View 1 (cartoon, rainbow, N blue to C red):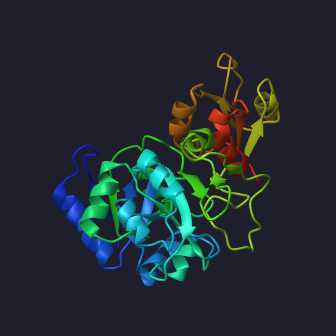
View 2: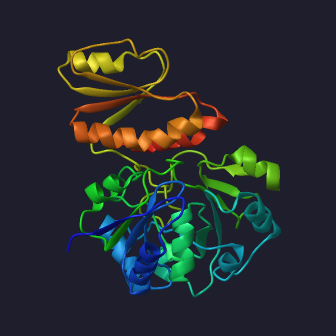
Length: 334
């Protein structure tokens, strides 16, 4: 059956629409919905069969755990066997918001959610639709990004439909998401806490609350290893079109055009005046937050335009751009 789509006001969500989506979740169905980061593909986190449908719909490998969305820190503590002082301080500062905390899980959390591992990622979303849905469903919601596994995350309802088609039951269309990149993931089961995935909340902001944080170095865990967090596979967030990353000043996009390729170029800096047959230039924002909000939408657009190659000029290698550079590095991984 075609996916049911309901448009929802993102400021004041319609109660009837939210009630309909909550009923689908409680009955074991899949609901796609917007968060302040990207669209999520949600199921009742305590229903192993429902969560299995997420893996099937996305083609997600079983080693890749799913973040669980909860209403508040109290519900988070019902799913974790430990709640250190650092968790409370971070929750007080950043929840609701784009921060996922990895903690030891309770047995009530099904193995499929955690990829069989001993920890669970928990976060309280800030988006009004996500919060209304959690309250109405009255269950924690397991929700990875609403797109095929390793593909570009969905930041608009049309991205969800294009990627997942009729594999989900209901889509709440709340318009474009504001953040554009997935949540920051922090492992609180280690000392010091360890940043597993950079996101909209920076390591420096976290350190201002709990002190030093270990940065994860190098490539992610091997694809045969059970992961503690999503977003750790070497290749992730990738468009269908081959993507290359280059440093500022590179002429790679024009060189590819001269070889007869149609090239989409996400440019950064003073490159907007360059023109060449077959070259499609998108001048990206120089502000990290605005760049992040627009990145996935531009990659989706270039995929749909049917270019032969996507070239991305990397933004600066600095703390503010860590999350963006992480996504681009993984998107360009072979």
